[in-house]
Image (cartoon, rainbow, N blue to C red):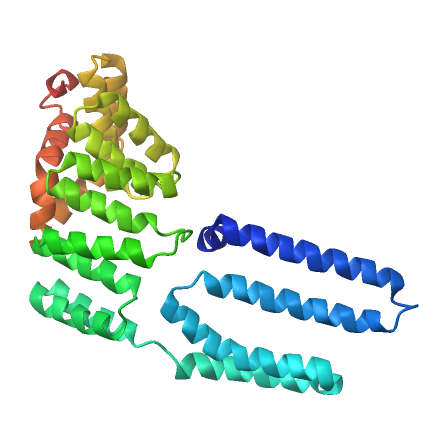
Length: 333
């Protein structure tokens, strides 16, 4: 939970939150020293609490997307205003004002609920039925209504990729890079999407450039290092492939199918460098993740896996042969 909150805010906002807390906390402690002698000290402490609450809310809200930010400001601002007025001018009504503020926040979240999720559900339903054109049409409608909705561009890009419309998917990922704020912690998703599209297009230099941007933003995300590892594997840069795949494993890859492939790619990279013991060790680790091979076999049978088959099928077949000991690591060199 704490890690997710830290990633959500980003480094800059975390430092702002820390200094805000430190400043208001220290000032409150100093005011406690003179509170008995200075009647204004209590009012000053109340004012500092208000600064801390509003400042903290401002920091958190600033991390939201523009659409979500406007929604939360519209909900929170009236509630915060009522409580502040009560604190300043009617302290005996603070309890009543707080209750009313909470009630308004709950009601406001229901009243101003975004329309997006329903369109997402409809687009996903059409996508699963292989009705790609209709799914894209739904996403076009949503983007027309919410032109700065990053998630809408992401979903549309994913549909375009499965449909084989790689140029249009690339444009959506590029659009995402312009919508994210400079310190948005999820900005790497757009660059990683670009890298995957360029890899599908067999444009290794462009794929590497985008993947390195994703890696610079989120070096501890296993997905960014996995993408770089795949690119370097395709480019036969075995030393770099080994580096990035080991970084992915260190970041704790959650899905068995990706762990299976990572160990296969490591075995191939070590074999290409004639490091036979390391290659055999990686192949042994790969065999411990047989469930991952089963998952790939199921995934590749899907009607929606045509684009994925074009990129991954040969590697998975070779990995399966290695798993079944139909070939040895020497055949990977």
